[in-house]
Amino acid sequence: MSKTATIAIDDKTIDLPVIVGTENEVAIDIQKLRDLTGAITLDPGYKNSGSCKSAITFLDGEEGILRYRGYSIEDLAEKSNFLEVAYLVIFGELPSTKQIETFEADIRKYTLVNEEMKGIIDGFPKHAHPMGILASLTCALTAFNPKVVDVEKEGDMYEAVCKIMGKFLVVATWAYRKTQGFPLNYYDNTLPYVDNFLQLMFKLPTGPYKINPVVLNAIDKLFILHADHEQNCSTSTVRMVGSAHAGLFASISAGVSALWGPLHGGANQAVLEMLEEIQKDGGDADKYLAKAKDKNDPFRLMGFGHRVYKNFDPRARIIKKAADEVLAELGVNDPILKIAKDLEEMALKDEYFVARNLYPNVDFYSGIIYRALGIPTEMFTVMFAIGRLPGWVAQWKEMRENKEPIGRPRQVYVGEPLRPFKEMSNR
Image 1 (cartoon, rainbow, N blue to C red):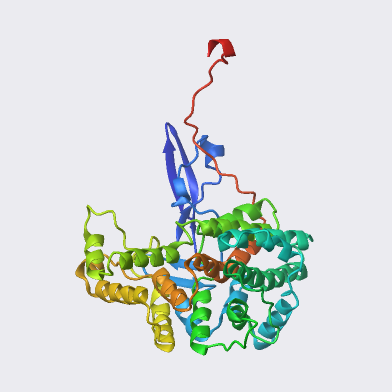
Image 2 (cartoon, rainbow, N blue to C red):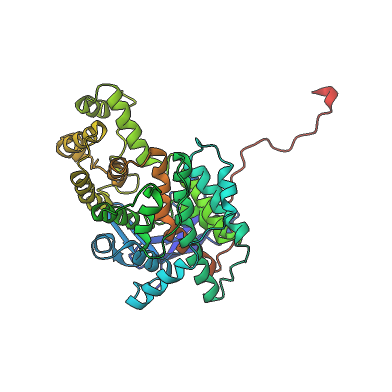
């Protein structure tokens, strides 16, 4: 027997369907609420509103669970690699050996970015923020790939996926090279996908670049951990823009802009900025741990706790090991990273933090890794975007294939009621 929820407004009572997901998530279907009652719901930030049904990612913040297409993030990070996970997230199943080989080969067909794109990137000042460059270049790709994706045709959709996967990685690293004054690198079709990220970023024309397997492993895991995260701000933006039947490149560009917001993708950058401030003030981790516990002190300890994960961030447990391995491998002697390790050790033992489940999250450890690799803080969100690309693509693809209607939220008007127009002489 199907469940219903009863709502009474004034003297009118209606029954609304209750939808139960495969992980027993419960939602009241209010699609006909306005038609039946004239009323709408008010939910600023959509914290209690489901915008869609999705089969991509399951997240349980209370239990610290994250799964892509039913596979635990722990298994995927340990046993898979980023390109396999990208295939899983976008197409729904883990690839066979032949499928992943074909997918990577097909991505390589589209890794060459039109030379005229260099003219666009040359127009940016050197001090431009890499996320601004990335959003612009991603949108500009639309001009060089004007063909409208026919989502009804599997071949068209697959080609669009391969194009964005190939070109986005290149233009993302070009944003970094531009800000550093380095010549732009090209994708090397003899190397795997994540290996290419490293050479695109760090290879210089003055000598060979050797890929460190410990660094490669850490970056691969970080990309996996960021591949999707349910209906967050940037993902919802991609779906909203795509619901107007905007193209894939334009929709992804909108997602990049949403991710750029400091309340969303800038968390790991905020961690490093906080650590730098602590260092400027003498580097006393004890002092700032005490400030964080003082209710009357406005200081916030960035990188601890999570607005979704109320217990622990499952991604943090995975990437902590990789962070420790990178620091040990590179032997980095950086006072900023020492402060980070001191804060981590103290907080993990401190009763105040333990009682409130304020553990270091994925942003804390990802910031440490990026800092150790010499990646500037303004590039941290670009790193996030590279990892999140498969999720954005999958969500756009799912939304279009499900024929979801154009996004059009309602509002409750609280302005002036109808009033007479005043002539200029009477104002």
